[in-house]
Amino acid sequence: MDAREAALRQAHDHALRWLASLSDRPVPARAAVEEIVRALGTELPDGPSTPADVVDLLATACEPGLTAFPSGRFHGFVVGGTEPAALAVDWLVSAWDQNCVMRAASPAYSAVEDISGAWLLDLLGLPGGSAVGFTTGATMANFTCLAAGRDAVLARAGWNAGRDGLPGAPAVHAVVGRDRHMAVDMALRYLGLGAPEAVPADDQGRIRPEALRRALAAGEPGGPTLVVLQAGEIHTGAFDPFAEAVAAAREAGAWVHVDGAFGLWAAASPALAHLAAGCADADSWATDAHKTLNVPYDCGLAIVRDAAAVRAAMGLRGDYLIQADEGDPIDKVPELSRRGRAFTVWAALRSLGRSGVAELVERLCRHARAFADGIAAIDGANVLNDVVFTQVCAEFGSEARTERVLTRLLADGTTWISGSTWHGRRVMRISVSNWSTTDEDVARALAAVRRAAAAA
Ligand SMILES: *Cc1c(COP(=O)(O)O)cnc(C)c1O
Image (cartoon, rainbow, N blue to C red; front, side, top):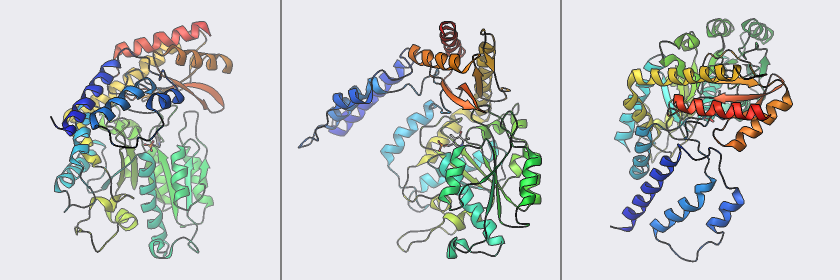
């Protein structure tokens, strides 16, 4: 066995041990940063080590400091786990080490990106022929889509942003809902557009279409305008009322973008597609494959109806590149060299099939409803949202008790559920995003919440 093979076998063994530990290990890490630093040692060695030893040292030293994010009982933030086919293919992606910049350089990658892109448009009910770019996550997907939108609305106003930049350009009016994700603000900042105008939302975090209409009417008539809507609010899972909001944006001549980092996947389920109704009439959509679809990090999707618009914003030419007339993977995203992200997306979709994707999304929602029912039955606890999707937002009678429940829950270790502030109240926020969560996981996590609440 050569050194490389020994290292790969070592990594394989550690990976299987880690995955096997998930059913029983506490979800939070057991060791702090300083302990892991001590276990690894801080001295840079003077000379080489055997690859297998390096793998073994890292895996052994880090093990107590790993959080069980892939556990079926991780319900903090909005993260996903990793579907088995996607995880296995992710190992291959590293071994294959493809540079995924150009069609000519890796025909295999481009074939898989083309097929996955078409499958995604079909599953998400989005217009065929839209450009599908594979980014690091939804943050960069929002950025990519809004870059295309910014340049397109400026072009309509007679301004060439690609050539002349932003100084002296007509002001771009960016309008968002009050409860949009902060990644949207960051994308707008990167794009030199500053802070957006935030319009009121309802108690679930859905933009109020009449407020959007008023904000748009107060802007420069016919001026360059971006409207950002949301599919899936991170506390409530709520979806903006797309039909009305898109109509209002269209009347104002705006580019309409949807941040659907985890919620866009409702469209893949016949039972849940009504939540996203009207969303397909937008101009661009950002979503993640590493959340609801459960592929490994890092994988977001930037989808733009007008493929030429995203190519104008993101495309580039270089004399040393071998570029295809129909466009290359780099023409849809900000990066040049990058990982072959479409491989894992293809693997997850191929392994689940159409019915499997729908069933996955429906299962996550069913578990979220079970959480809501279980929490509502606890003395003094209140579920604050309409549980339409994968998110549950709850409180325990007072800010102080909610805080105590959260602290006890984390110390208990059976599950990871974290806090947030929702419309001025301290809340517990539960996200069900992991493919591997079972009814038993939900029962165990709920029992832990009951224990924490009983003691708080
Ligand atoms: C997670 C999330 C983002 C950011 O996505 P990343 O993949 O972490 O970059 C943006 N918007 C919403 C609604 C999200 O849930």
